[in-house]
Length: 100
Image (cartoon, rainbow, N blue to C red; front, side):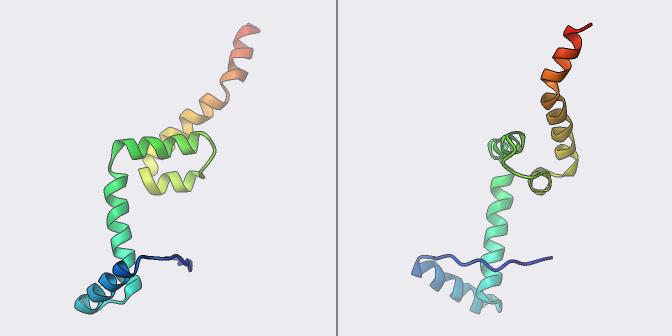
């Protein structure tokens, strides 16, 4: 897995708690934070409302297809992409039908 360095600020008490958890679990702070973030994302991504919002971001061209796949899975993302292609061609199709 590729990694990317990110810098952000945390409240001191969270840093202390992460350091204690790291000591107890024999991990480093980064591993503890990654695990916590993964758990949070798994929880929120299972919520239908969140998934719908991610689809909206994709339909509005605010996120790339691979980001959609990461959240909702490849099969569902492929279905959304196919629907988007139909929606994007809607006006063109309407013009074609009007010309018949």
